[in-house]
Length: 169
Image 1 (tube, rainbow, N blue to C red):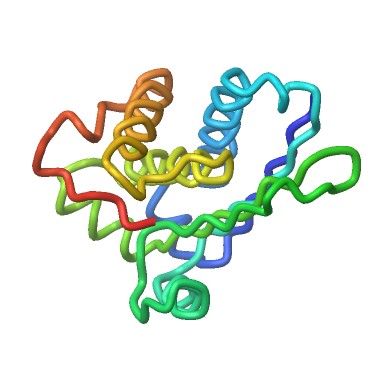
Image 2: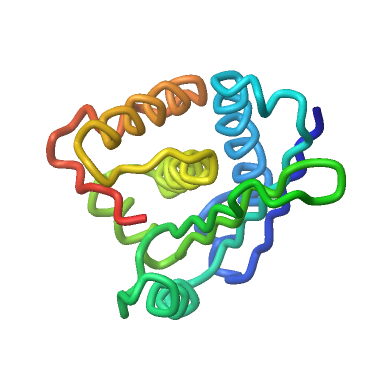
C-alpha cells in the first residue's frame, strides 16, 4: 500500500506560524491515516491519496459559505471524496485549514500552533475516513480516536480539559 499526501501552502503566514509546516502536516496526516487504515483492513490493500491546503481565513470562509452555508471562517474543513477511485487507489478527499483561526484558537487555549494544527489535521483525516461528530456517540468515538493518535505524536489530549471548545470542522 502506498500513501500520497499532497500539502499545498496557500497562505504564506503558515511558514511563520509553524517551523517546517509541510513536514509537520505530512507526518501528522500519515500517522492519522495509518491509524485509520489499521482499523479498516479493507483500506490496507488500497493505495490512498489525500490533499491538505494550508490557507487563510478568507479562503476557508469562502468554502464554508459555498459548501456549508455558513458565512464565517472555521478552523478546518474536510471534503471526503467518498472513495473516488484515482490512479491505482482511492482518493480520500481534501482538507483545508485556516491560519488565522488556528493561531487565535491556539493562543486562547494556551497551546502551540503546531500542536493545534496537528490536532486539526488528525480531525480532518478522520473525517475523510468516515468519522463524524453529529451526535454524542459519534463525537465520543471520534474524540477517543483523535486522542489516541495525538498521544502517539506526543501531543496532550485536547479533550482532557473540559474548557476546550468543540471543533467546528
